[in-house]
Image 1: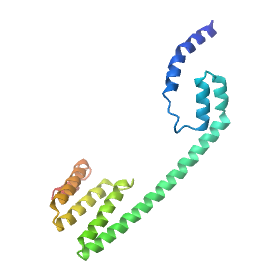
Image 2 (image 1 turned 180 degrees about the vertical axis):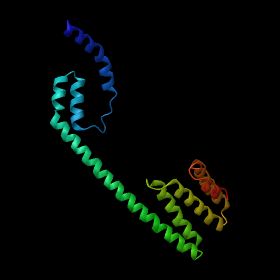
Image 3 (image 1 turned 90 degrees about the vertical axis):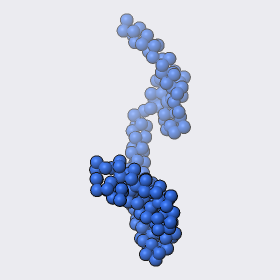
Length: 174
């Protein structure tokens, strides 16, 4: 009696299971998953479970964890390099600005801003400062529309952070 009950439950779940399998995207699936998936699709559950042997899955988990660790290390190194490059661009822009070479300073500041928007470690306050500095150079060049665009972006960032740092918002309005 219990076996018949379990069989009926399995029969009810089978169409739903098949529908779920049909929606799976295998583009980035592991070889183990693809093999087991194909077997499950054919109704070969026992064979699929054999493919998903614990030792194979444990090895797969180890590989994934190792890849994640390497990825995190690379991400950290890239971020550190990005921060050093950002500082170099700041120094270059400052040098050009001191020599009244505003176009060259602007070029370095624009590249720095692009880099900052990609870096994970850049604080929003730093981003607001970068927009404010860029606006100042645009003003010095007489490009007031671009200066205004940068000031507006600076202000937007500061308003988002206003509860965290009200003095920053005051600076943005000045």
